[in-house]
Length: 294
Image (cartoon, rainbow, N blue to C red):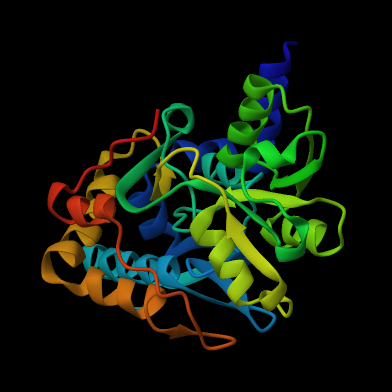
């Protein structure tokens, strides 16, 4: 039996292949439950305060979408289950039906679009470097022959790996399983820098006990959009998700939510990221585009 056939049989045995093939709204209606994911360290999008409570900009977007699902299905008591995902497992767990919606800090790009679908873009960011102020790292040329961290399963790891090869910098790349792990590699001097989306780096610094010793440096290597992620070939659910986001963008609710999480103090340390909305995001409040990065 071929490997693909074995995998399909295993999924069927677990009851996952049928789930993944089902349309999301029907699946949710039949079970009276929707399962949404959260990230543990994607500040200020989706992150934990305390042991189990997820908060953030993307969490509130998820909540708004769930409320529209309740209205669409006429199920005011719809159960909401929440599971943690990582950069590495977020796509396979969505595809196999383990959960139904991811609004976190996921880049909408063409490669991922082969496996999943994306909503209207809700943020734009680019890869930069987090480093200790004492490291004297200011840009990518300073990373030659040094150890650099990124996070498993991210576009940033691919970007920095390609840049390393193109520029012949002879860096050694090591990967954390999530952003907190990658930050720890820098804080413990196992890496001189952490390559990641700049907004996530600012968020990590804001919530680090060592924030005064850290900084974000370097040019942005590329600009990428974030979007909510859902299963492919489910136009009804995509229309609902896009409808929620577009309504919020048109009404001003999205802008208020942005101000709450990017321009005012956020938990747990009451830090203000003081990050105004980018020109790309301002434009998308009108364009309502789900265009991926290439």
